[in-house]
Length: 58
Image (cartoon, rainbow, N blue to C red):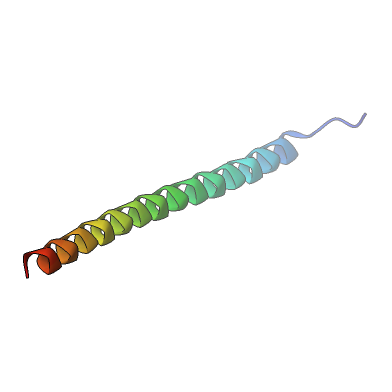
């Protein structure tokens, strides 16, 4: 098995770091989008409830 030279090892580690950073970025984006979707769903439910109350009061 060929030995990995230090420069190749550093390059490989750098590539792994970039891939890991991309994964964390994707996870973060998914978490933000999930939280935003949950908030929008909650606001829509509150709006629907408010409209129902308005119709019942009328």
